[in-house]
Image 1 (cartoon, helix red, strand yellow):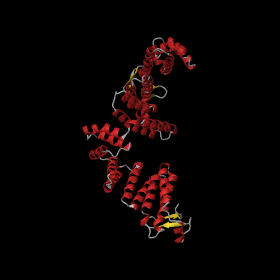
Image 2 (image 1 turned 30 degrees about the horizontal axis):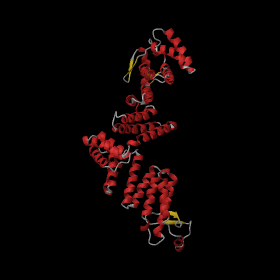
Image 3 (image 1 turned 60 degrees about the vertical axis):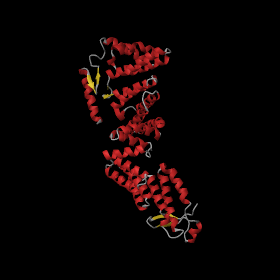
Image 4 (image 1 turned 135 degrees about the vertical axis):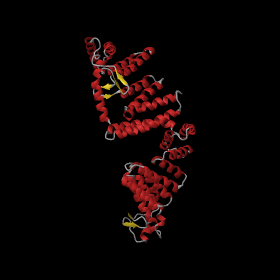
Length: 457
């Protein structure tokens, strides 16, 4: 896709010399004849006279000559617009009069529009730069016109419509910040912030997928994503989210776009106990059954402890996922493992955990499930004081393995180790049954694991 775009932009750049041309809805006002304006000698002279002081960051002396180039031969170089932003920022820093400051801000923002007008295609790479120019304009608009967040919002919204997940990373955050400021100034209701968050969640995930080999870019995206989560937090209480979406759901209970948004946002923010979540989930699955809607239906019945119905939906979800959607399948196996534990079907719970480990051998949650299955079945796997407690050795082995492999489960694994280590046989019991601390022991029953003899702590 990107290759095709590059070829297209290359062809477009060749055609620019033939006159004005439309590029994705944007007309370039430049052509070869217009490059140096009506007075090419004067244009080249002023270009030189302003560029040199700009290099020295002497923006005051550069301004008069830059202004001549900007007004009379804007097609000469796109650096006219890049340098113009620097010059305007210098003027803003040194201007005291509020009225003049506002005029300079307007001039600065107009420079972005002029660059789009004359250079929608970047001459250095032959690709459209409209989206990136708009993103930079939105950032400056939000910075210099804080009382007008709706202006910055509309600019960055257009940039995202053009570039999607490829928008400049800073654009994601200003989109959220501008939406929040609009709500604060009562220019919009909270729904706007939730909708923007929903849109950004998808775009950020896509952007990180696109940058999967670029560690620097991924680090930047993670930082911005975390900032967006922090910004969204005041709007993310379950009560707020339910209130925002409740009336919309009542008005359009069969709108699939709305249903997907409600279920996704409530699931992501762990608001799955609400009646709204259950109702939206059920409607969505009736209208447009999918792997995700089946998964959400399973969550509904897990909350209600209707284990057999939950299993039915989880198995349906597995069938609907594509073969390569392994991480999503692992999530289903995890829930199935939890359901089997609740039903005391311990071998089946272990089987689900083993399926997770086939996808990701370092998944600590899978080892937690196996450990829980061993611990919960311990009393059923023996007929004396030793054999009824031996399964706790195997369970703790799994918790220790989970903690070692997966930092995400360190806290829960540590707690379980502390709890079930106290259930080990006493040193007297171990001695009574002819065993020695530290030697191997085979836990039989359905477990069939070799472990190490240890006394209770």
